[in-house]
Image 1 (tube, rainbow, N blue to C red):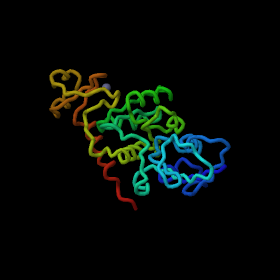
Image 2 (image 1 turned 180 degrees about the horizontal axis):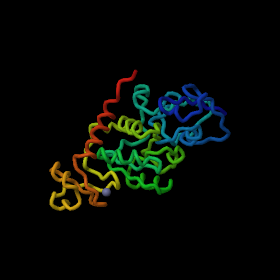
Image 3 (image 1 turned 135 degrees about the vertical axis):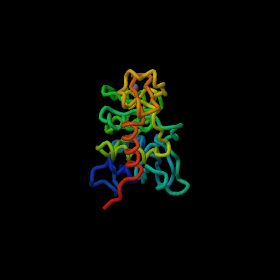
Image 4 (image 1 turned 45 degrees about the vertical axis):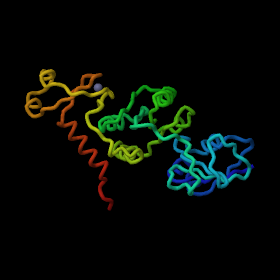
Length: 249
Ligand SMILES: [Zn+2]
């Protein structure tokens, strides 16, 4: 028995080079769900937005039949008119994230931009999948196998390996730019920041900092103090870079 798979867009990133941007004749001996079969070829289900089999939209539970022609999409724009049946419910509200152990720098950047982002360097795969499910967080990872766990609904494989490019990638994918809000979450621990009176923290700051800045924020979890000095400038510069990448060439 054969089924014919065509993967669109970024889903090709998960295929061996010779199988990219072409139709794959996939032999199978027993019937399986389309979700299991497409994951066995490479792409993880959270990156699959829509499936069209022999011209009709199907869900992940569809059982693949011999000679099926299967189109797998990762963005609505590519799906033929009238065939879009989104497989993943729209993410509810402002994006919140959980990141795997390789993405510590990206976690700090997302917090700095005002996004609730869980990160620990000792989360194991089971816990990452569980927390993303229970707390409805988008799981960002560089582990494809983790994204294939059935508990994961919203997730994404981070392609870029340098932190600034990966931040840019995530800002674009989740349209974060208009949602950026500084001084919401602590870069170090994801605690909530609240404004604090200068008198309450004067003993912890250098005199020149106290003399130069009026507004201070303190993390309610770890006590870290933030002001519109170096942290803010660093963030503002990074956001400008992310929103306006330098012209190519
Ligand atoms: Zn903190």
